[in-house]
Structures are given as C-alpha cells and as structure tokens.
Figure 1: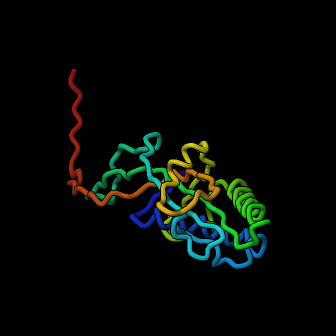
Figure 2: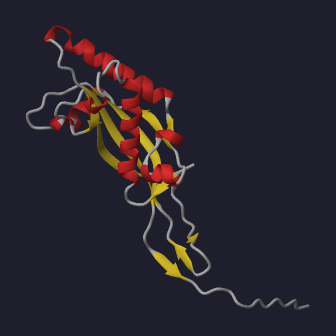
Length: 192
C-alpha cells in the first residue's frame, strides 16, 4: 500500500521514524527521547542520534497514471510517487577511549529497530499517514564508503559514521482538479 497525503506527508514520515526510534531506544542505549531527532549532521546540536533527509527521488515503479474520481463532478490528477533517502548518524559524549564503541552501540540498536519495524503502519505513524491508515517501507541503502565520504561534504565537520535508508514509496497528492460533467443520458444502438 502506498503512503499518500498532502504536502505534509514528507514531514510525517520523518516524524514517524523519530517516534519509533524514541520509543524503542530509550532509556537504553539513549537515556532520553529528546536526544533523538531530525537534524543535519553538520548541525546536530545535542542529539545522540540524528535522522537527516538528504535526498528525494521519483519512484517510477509506483507512479500512477489514472485520474482519481472526486465525487461525481471532479477528477484529480494522480499523486507524485517518491522515495525518501535518509542518513542516520550516531553521536556520543563519552570519553574518547569509549566514544566509538558507544556510537557503534547506538547505531547498531537503531539499525536493529528499523530492521524489526521495516514497515511503519498503525500506531507507529503520525499525521497524514495515520489519518489515511497508510504504511511505508524502510530499507537499508547500501552506500559504499566512497559515496558516504563524497556526500558528507560539510565544511568543517569531520566524517561521522552514518548509515543510509530508503523510505517509501510516498505519494504527494496533486492539487490539480478538473471538473467534469455528469453523464445524464445513455444511448445504446445495435446496428446490424
């Protein structure tokens, strides 16, 4: 089932993932839910785990081409199907000697949570996704080290271990609606 919605659906997907991570990762390995959030790796603030939307791509496999009936006098253009690309990055304030191990534990638990909840639905989703009773898939994105290093192109921020995910498909509703006239009469003829 495709996740559908208005323009807020992208924000709703991110909020749903953060909600899941907060529910599943506190108090262990992260002590407070507020330490998990959405932020750029270059501006992560005091977060221990950040989710960052770095790309949105057309999902041609799930593109719809049929107009959608809206009552008896209107049709709506089909929605735009997209996939959302996220980075998940772990941070620790532990002493230097144990910081990397702490970040590996945080990232490992986050990956475990997303693997175990690879389809978000029901009480796991918020906003438009919850209103429409929709679901989205979460799949590990296999970026190699060179790709991550190239994408991690923030000026003075050193590379931080991150993992990529593709989430979708997500449909963004079109606002284009055409009025149509109702069929008032039928004319069937058989000619022989």
